[in-house]
Length: 300
Length: 300
Image (cartoon, rainbow over all chains, first blue to last red; front, side, top):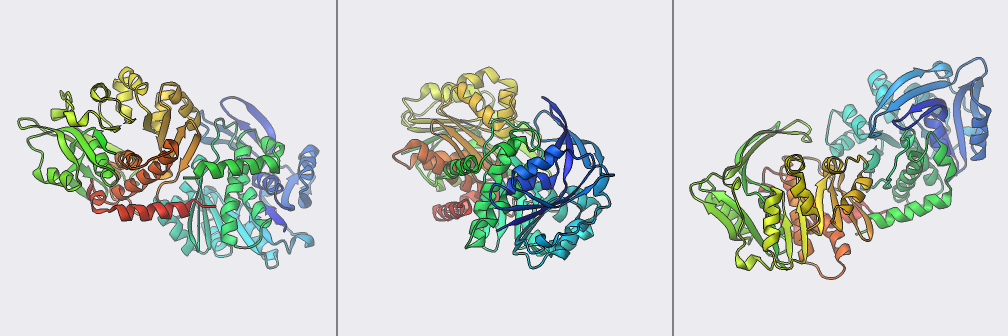
């Protein structure tokens, strides 16, 4: 079945201790849609300005991503983020953000998007996530991702979103911030009370935790010796996850466990290059190989 | 088969945001020996002063721990550590350390200890770990634990130790400090080059990583909703690990994976009470139950 991904479509300028790369394809929806496309037909909902390079449109298309919902504003500027990573690649600092066309964007779903069964509300302002939900007709499974910024400036919108989605994805520190609870398993319990049946905590190189009606699942991260650029790893994780889920049948929670593993592996490829470069170069076969490796890495 | 545990036998005064507990039984050897005792006959090698409460000797004996190697110095003072945990229980601060009888201790192995097949050099000064190794006759498997302090003040002794042990255990930040390498898998590779065939990285609530000739094993931590006092969790982990290993036959590396899981579960009990209180109250049956739960928690 198909996947709808809404989020930011951006140009990222990324500085790491080893290199500097200006105006790469970035944004939560770009990373997530490319990741999802390895597993299921993927539709992109986003907005770009007149400065958005044609080669990036070709890149989406090369992954079979439907662009009917990618709005183009010729007179506008594409959302641009620039940031810098510290030596250990764990801390990053935003240098500059230009919202551009995303600032006043009110997404309008093409008719062919309205009945998409699997929906990823990738990281973007909660009011936009709501607006997409409002236009959907009986989606089968809705996942929302977010970031600390929205907890800081749009908490009521975010809380209202939690009661409208099946799964909510956030990282450890965001879970602590949202619940005022440092213990991740207690935080998860509190997040369930806010609405979502499934809570997924991203722990970066420490893996991820899923909590659902059948209990906890602890997922490892794929062991990487070298991280080139972790930007978009979280988006690739949720994208790979929902893409894989959309390709499955049967027991949802069991499939979700495997979906998380596929997400974690897709994210591992993302980290091996700048922007979406390494992700776009991978194949379903290479992903499946790493999934097999992970199975062996946790066996006891 | 039996296990020899050498390390500190201490009195710990522990302050957490919720409680204060003076002069609890503590020290790396106490935690590790109690943990090991659930799986294998355990021999303790340590030193205490005249102030060491008889009830703690009874506690060791209650776990069937052999005390032939526990030296008592009536005129001396037992090693005393006092520390304080911050709200999130992840950061701790040492308030005071009195080395007491441990300062000039030169361990002498009772004859019945010399041929112990499984040896844990729990966290203590590297020269003491060396002195124990010098007196052992063909041990089957030697594990050494350590802490950042020894990297700071006795690095040459520690490095020399690495070429004498089968497995070396340290936490993530210690691995980074030792190898000047932030990526944990690259750090592991460098530690192998320093000697040990097995490298085990403790990641606290994020689990542990084993690296051996057959590759990487990623172990989860047992999910705990409430941590009362994490003091000694790392020692309980290595103690449970070597105790379980000593109880197995066959493929060493396969057994070591399961040993790490048993160590992680034993450590989870340790965290649920002050000092060794919760560990001493658990049973082999309760440990096995949590191991079973962990098996289900990582299945995909």
